[in-house]
Length: 353
View 1 (cartoon, rainbow, N blue to C red):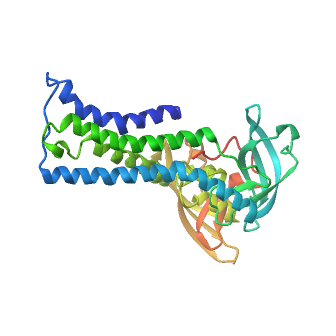
View 2: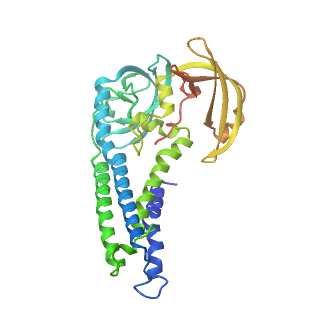
View 3: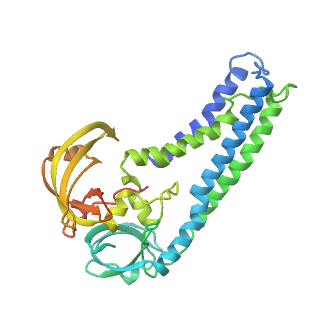
């Protein structure tokens, strides 16, 4: 399903669904325009009013942090990475044209370079080429990159990149933020005018839309920002943090990104592989038990979980596989098959946000 469908789906459940339950008894089923008046005690009504005020403040702040402040923050981080990032030279082993926008092209590169630990890796990278006529990023050439040592999004960017702001995107997000502020105040005034009927705030209750709308908004925000990403093993945030940050502005880089850009390579023996019984997008999660020798000659045994495609489930078996591990924390590992310098050409990014 398209992103627009899910945006509409969330908009319906956040804003419209609570209103249906609140106003249907007043208009649709009572037979009178006045309808029944839900009457709370004064103490409970003011408690719900306080909950609503708190929820709206948090909801508006969450949206500002995720979709407005990140616009300014990303531009600042890009400039800092260009100035202070660790320089690396990457060989371009494959180039694919994703879209030709006329004034620029969206391209996907396969890069081979040494990461921050000196390990030679292969990694996909997508960005916009503002000067496609110069053919600067052809297969067989090289590109100078800068890596932010802290891996803050965007963790890796080309040298000489031009920092611009998507004016339409920024205007849309700022406009929605202002709309939320106006709606939160205007809807409260409208509700008082429509429902108070001389009883003051006693119409307010916990399930009133003015209270539940920001609570639903926070719920979906946390669901997208934490639950889905965590259950997916942080894989959802790889390309987002690499290129410019996830939609919700996660503060910590995904585990996979840290391992790829800071990890050392090793060969691990798969001791055991079992399904956990959990499925993400109908793909099973598998728990692996591995054994490998780190760069200090120490034998390590680790356990980690990974989402496996149903098409590849038959290939999950004991044997030897390449891994990336963090030198400072060897318990953090990642299968490195797709990051080997001679790995097959990737068909696309690991994930977009």
